[in-house]
Amino acid sequence: MKKIQTLGVHHITLTGADRQTSIDFWEGVLGMPFIFDQPNLDDNDEGHLYFDPGDGRLITVFTNENRKGNRDRTPMEPGCVHHLAFEVDAAMHEQVIARLEARGIGHSGVKDRGFMHSIYFKDPLGLLIELACYTFIPPRGSSHAEVMMEAHKLRVAAGAKAIEREHLADAVLMIVERSQGSLSEDRGARNPYAR
Image (cartoon, rainbow, N blue to C red; front, side, top):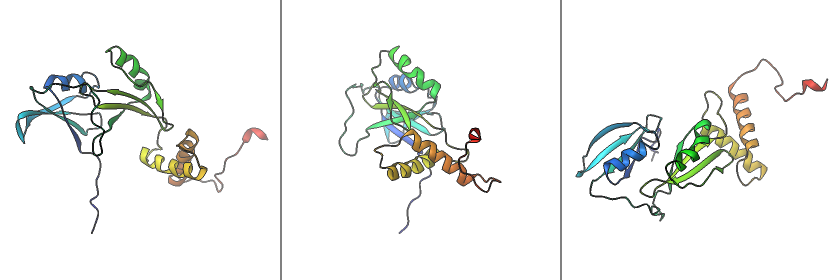
């Protein structure tokens, strides 16, 4: 028996209401270009809209003009989607609250998760959306996931409840030292100001 190795998220498909609500939210609020439109090939009564969330992957929405939105929170039973999280940069993250409030959209305010800052709000159909901004930049040739894994190990070794900024900073340092050579025999920390 062997694993089936995934290479990333190909797409996420959501059940939407009418076509215009989907376009207005995914492109008109979140800025995702509307890139592809065709019928749902498994249900002639539905449309299938495709949006680019910014990384070339896809968010797709099945639409039906006879479905109306319900702003109540989507189900949270086992097997249901809790929320979708999308990455924004620091400059945009600082603007999110004002841009949501300009539309009258309620939100959580900024939540500091240590390794990221998050703002939560519901889409027009009750799905919880998170806009997240990492608090660190991975070293060149590395990934956020690699830094997170190293920071997790440091957190566990320190007995901390959650990843803290120091764990992230030390993880980045470890990855750089591991991946980038140096002519120095000793790469330890120094204080040239103490001489």
